[in-house]
Each structure stands twice: as C-alpha cells, then as structure tokens.
Length: 360
Ligand code: NAP
Ligand code: ZN
Image 1 (cartoon, rainbow, N blue to C red):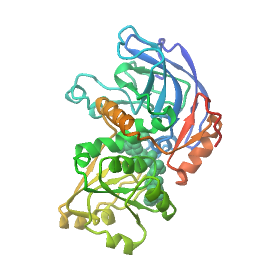
Image 2: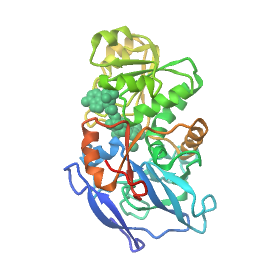
Image 3: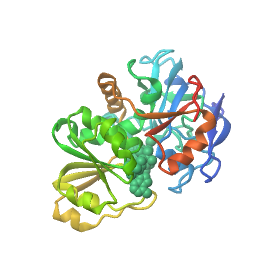
Image 4: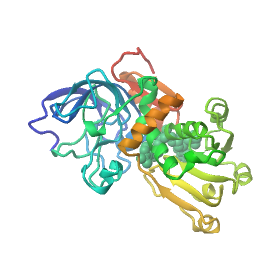
C-alpha cells in the first residue's frame, strides 16, 4: 500500500520509475501532519551514492516509483500539537531514518539505526503501511524524533550531506575511539561524499590522514583543501607497499566491488578497518592479511538521532561543512550520470527550493 486515506497533502518531487538510472517529475501524496509530526519545506537535498544504488536497483530491493534523498535540510512550516522541540521557521535536517519502534533497547539508547524495525527515509514501509518517499521533493513530513536542528552557523546547502555522509563516518569514528586519539593515523579509502567528510573530521580531531584513492587527480585538493597528510594511489603497488603496517584505522567508502586485502596490509598489527560502503557485490576478504596482523574488520550503518545532533553541533562549533556542487532540479539526471562515473567534488546537492539560481 503506497498511501492511506490520511495521505492528503499533494507534493511535487522527482522519482525513478525503473532501473534506467534517471528520475522524472512525480506528484504524490504525503500524510497529513500528525500530532507528533513536523512538516518541512525542503530547501536542499544531497545526492548520496546510496540514492544511485537504489535508483539503479543495484541491491534488488527497490520499490518503484522511488523518490530518493536522505540528506535533507529545510525550514519547518508546521508542527503537531505534541511537538515542543521545534517551531515554525526553525532550520532543520532529516537523514536516513523515518521511523523505528521507539521502545526496544536500541531505541532507548538512541541507536534507532540498529532497531530491527528501522524504516528508511525512502524505500521503507512506514508505521501506517505506506511506502516512504525521500527528499527529492518539495515538502517532507517527519516524526519529531527523526528531525534534528541545523546550527545557525552552518549554511543549509553545505550542511545537507552531513545528514548521511557526515553521521555515517562520525559514528564509527567515535565508536572506535578515533576522535579521542590525536596523533593516531587514519586511512580513508575512496575520496567521495563520505570520504571527504571523514578527512575533515579526522583533521579536526588531530589525526594524521592518508587518503587511499584510485584518482591521482584528487591528490592536490586532498592535501591542500582538505588537509590530508598523505595521498596514496591504490593501483600503484609501490606506493601501497611503502605504506604497509602504518595505519591505526581505516574507513572504507568504496562504492564498487573491491578486495580488502591490500587495504588490510596498510594497518598496523591490531589495526581496525571499518567498512561503511555497500557495493552490490561482496567485497573480497582474504584471510592472510587478516590473521597475520590480528586485524579487525567491522561495519557501521549511519548513526542514531542523539549522535546526529551531536555531530551537527560539533560541525557548527568547528565550522565543518561539505564541499558541494550545487545543482538545479533540472540537473539531477546529469548529476546522477556524473556520480556514476566518479566525477564529483565531493557531493552534489540539489537546490530543491530553487533559491540559489544554481545551474549544473
Ligand atoms: P561516492 O561519493 O561515489 O564516493 C565513493 C568513492 O569510491 C569514489 O569517490 C571513489 O574514490 C571510490 N570508487 C568509486 N568507484 C570505484 C572503483 N570502481 N574502484 C575503486 N574505488 C572506487 O559515494 P558515497 O556517497 O561516499 O558512498 C560510498 C558508499 O557508502 C556507497 O556504497 C554508499 O551506498 C555507502 N553508504 C553507506 C552508508 C552506511 O550507513 N553504511 C551511508 C551512506 C553511504 P576515489 O576516486 O578516491 O578512488
Ligand atoms: Zn546516504
């Protein structure tokens, strides 16, 4: 069931109708603003590689029509009678989560992302049985629990990708103690949306950062703009060998199938690799680099709501924003094509409200 009788608000958005890799204008219904809900005028929405995986049905789970988008910033236009934390006019954000059960152990600890009833912002099934539609749309209705405040110091466009890319790297960095390890060394594999924010967080917390990339053209920017200490081209065996056993941690953000073997060799004994990427094919995990270095491979899936607010507040304090390319709603398909061929510095953000006269 895609809608219920309570779905009374007509909203204009952009949807993928099939696996072609493109979106088209799409008018649909959202639920009425409930007592616990916040209605948001969407200003900006980041384009995560997950959007592309879903649009192309890479994982075989896409329900068309699909309205993607889970890096959403905007302004509150309506609040329900049970909502005390938000007011009309507030600058807010919504990330990957639309709902969770609210009472399991994970929800109680604000690890809503690990609730086994978690409902994603799009391509999920909401409490009322309707399919969720994301931020490639002009209006969003969100439950108050899954809305965060965007600090006044952060611009809504360059902050939008923090709602997914930001929290997805922040959460494991915090969990594994990286943010409390100044002087420690982190390797960031893949310098895209997630990767470039990981570099910024790591530098803000005093880590030494090595970018491990397939794109030699990104070296200058990675060092001069993002502050990376080293840059290694992963296809250059000599460069990779020179880095063996040098890193405490690695975050892997590579969206395509690859082997973890050469990356694990870069870790010191007892080093930790966090896989946040979700390629459609299983990654290769050879056992020798794992056992000879007593290394750990772990995963992480976005972050909880408390942690998301904490991350945004920290970004406000340290002035951390994303490096974005703003695109107009007419430019979404061109941006998707460029994202597919790894041609973006470092996140496309859609100017949904059209306030910035942007052009691709
Ligand atoms: P992105 O902006 O496209 O960045 C991915 C990077 O991977 C590229 O910039 C590129 O970096 C590298 N890469 C791409 N194709 C490659 C290939 N064939 N071989 C080697 N490297 C390649 O994507 P993103 O938005 O950061 O997302 C990255 C992945 O994380 C996606 O799979 C996405 O679905 C997943 N994700 C997971 C979560 C979670 O909760 N765990 C949240 C968000 C996204 P270089 O040019 O530097 O090599
Ligand atoms: Zn995402």
